[in-house]
Length: 216
Image 1 (tube, rainbow, N blue to C red):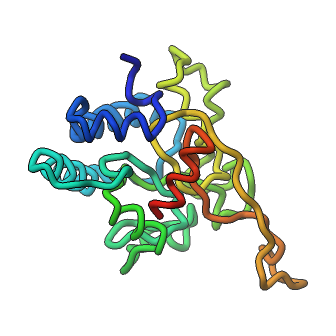
Image 2 (tube, one colour; image 1 turned 180 degrees about the vertical axis):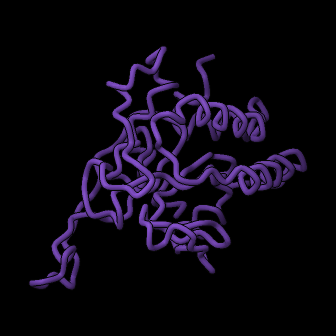
């Protein structure tokens, strides 16, 4: 069987629910992957303790035959401009480099309530003002295809670490294009007034997108 890290969310979810894949083992695989590619500077914060507790809880539910969501046990990383309770939330800035959020952003709350396992907070341009993750206070993210990372496989190349995407599943390396819309407060003088960025998710297929929307 291929590594779970290259399978679509729906397939991983089936393996988890059928007890063919242990959630805590999947979590450990993802931690190993983070350590393997840490030179890419993709993460600002790795929430190892939180993820360990979340994965253990989901696995306990599965063991006890408690029904879990299709997102139950799925590892996920959040862009570091989303508030995560009691976790450093920096917006990749010096100003907020020590800021600890007192609450979860709605998207974080919804995903974690469905059993998603938080791996950490990913790098971005400072205050998300950019498109290539080169202005982060914590340093730029390296282009994985030019990093010299060996071997360059679907497991080691995180195709979603480009600073433009918001919610990043750890399984299924292929992305669906984000949906865009203008902010309602589009006005002159507002630096992001006409930004096309919106929160979105990136499953492996259109079916996965529909499924994620239904779950969220």
